[in-house]
Length: 428
Ligand code: EPU
Image (cartoon, rainbow, N blue to C red; front, side):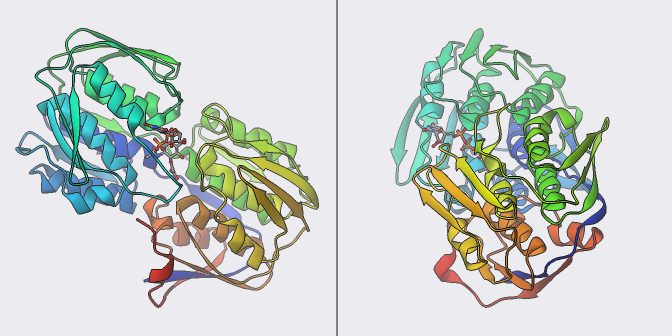
């Protein structure tokens, strides 16, 4: 076990390069199962969720080899058994994507009910409903979901709620189904568009990704290609907020500014300067931060995956900010840790009221999930004194080399051995 020790109070300065998007990569790596030839993925982030995806592929017989840093070769033709090992599936939410891809290729899939960050109850009823619309059936057998079909037939899928994972799984399962599938009330996140672009480059026929109606005409074969994964919107947003919270000046490179618009707009409301270039943004803050209210929404609204980091920054603005986040049940777990650092935040269900005091003090804190961990690191960077962030394995699920990237910006952050804190370990 390791933890980060951060000596705070130093403004971040310099340039940081953003890695490939975790939530696009976990879908696209799983989607290599649908490809009838080998393919190569570039800009693959070096994070533990991706390492698990690759382990899952290899465990089923696929060949996955590094080519250069962040570039991998995939040949999934050698997969024989459409079954994800139980322990690997349980460790990651995105393992559900193997249900869609295995069903799409083999018409048969065994995947354990997923784990991942503990954000409360995270059902997959909409995923299963989509598979059933295509003619599949499913059973729950000893903690595993078994989905199977004689053949998949294109159909109309209407999602009752906005679901990123459900939309991705519906695309995966229908890309080789016979005929036309129409997904209504589809999610619009950038990683859904990236997945569709990957599949279309291989010969799929997917139209409308990025809107709430996606039309997919099934194809028989997908050819091998080389494809580069988009930059991570949330990693970029995290560095933007870290720059603002420390009153720094940071050039954030390898980004798609359009994907960052909701974050940029909110930062500007807080008095932060954000300059957008073609593939970079420059964030600088020098004076007092201003308060703002925030409600998370599906894309293009403000992402729930940025709420903990942004709320942490708002504890450094003097005055009251009200945060509403009802996408998951457990998205305010970091608040009790921030209180140790002197933050004044009350939470009632899905609403948090932050009474910012303009400062935080260093303290030992524990990450409860990926974005909570990122928020506590930002708190430590901005706080006076020393902050120790424990349970950093959560952070490593989604941030490539976060300590090295922050050191490159002048932060005093060190990785040190930590005693096992089993009492706080959630499903990884
Ligand atoms: N939901 C259902 N039934 C379903 C699916 C979802 O009730 O069948 C509910 C969820 O419980 C939640 C809401 O619908 O309340 C939205 O869930 P969604 O399916 O959109 O989320 P997800 O696919 O499980 C992805 C990201 C999350 C991100 C959310 C929202 C991946 C691997 N995960 O999760 O990312 O917070 O979309 O944008 O793409 C993270 O990166 O830290 C993270 C948690």
